[in-house]
Amino acid sequence: MNIKNKNILIAGGSGFLGQALATHFEENGNTVWTLSRNPTTASQIKWDGRTMGDWCDKIEVADVVINLCGKSVDCRYTEANKKKILDSRIIPTRLIDLAIAKAENKPAVFINASSSTVYVHSEDRPMSEADGIIGNDFSENIVKSWEAAFFEHEIKGVRKVALRISFVLGKEGGAIPKLSTFAKLGLGGKQGKGNQIISWIHVEDFCQAVDRIIQRDTLKGAINLASPNPVSNMEFMAAIRDMVGAPFHIHQPAWLLEIATFFLRTETELVLKSRYVDPKILVDDGFVFKYPVLSTIDNLV
Image: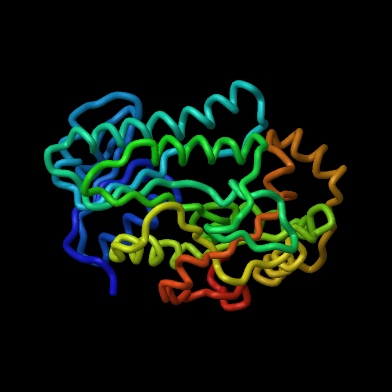
C-alpha cells in the first residue's frame, strides 16, 4: 500500500527521478513541494542549495524530506568537474541536515540519494549492503564522502536512509533515450568486452521502493535500489536493440570508447565499470518488483 496524506519535500526535484517521485506521491494523495533555484509553480520553493532561507519553513511541516541533489557524472573528470561533482552532493546534504536539526518540528524520515558506484568493479560477486566491497577510486570516494556527510550527525526522531541507486530505466529520462538513439543508428553493440554487469531498476519500481522505505520504520542506513536480476552489458544492449528494432549493430571495443568518450566529453567508466548489486535489504523485507527481469519491460521507448 502506498503512503497517503503526507507532506513531502524534495530537493533536486526537477530531474528525472525527482519528477518521477513527485508524480508518484501526488497521484497517491500526498502534498509535494520541490526545492528549485528557478521556481515556476506554487509547489516549487526557491533555494540556492547553499544557504538557509524561507524554504526551511517547509521542513517544519514536512513528514518526509528527500534530497536528490548532485551534478551529473556524465562529464570529463577534470579537476574542476571533480570539485563540482563533490560539492553538489556534500553542500546540499549538509545544509538540509542542518535545517532539519534546527527545526522545531522534524520530519520522520530523511532520505538522501547515493549510488551503487560505491562498490568495486565485480563481474562474479554480487554486492549486498552488508558484505559489498567498498572501493577506493574517484567515483567510489565521492559516494563514501557523500554518505559520510549524510550520516555524520544523528538527529533524534529522524530516520535516515541513503539510496544506493543503480541504473534507473525510464523513457522520460536517464540514459535510455540516448542509448535508444545510438541503437537506432547501429551503435547498439556491446561496449568493451560486454561482460560488465549492469544493475538496473525500472523507474516505477524505484518510486515504489522509496515509498516502501518511507512506510517501514525498520528500513534505515544504506539500501541498494536495484532489480534482483542484473544482466551483462552484452545482454542489456541486445535488449535495447530489440526495443527499438535496430536492424544491425556495431560492437564498441574499449579503445574506440576511449576516443568516443573524449569527444563526447564523458568517461568510459560509466559504461565499462561492472556494478553487480544485490538488493538484499529490500528483498528480505518482502518488496515485490513489478519489473524483476529485463524481459518484462516493454515500455521504455
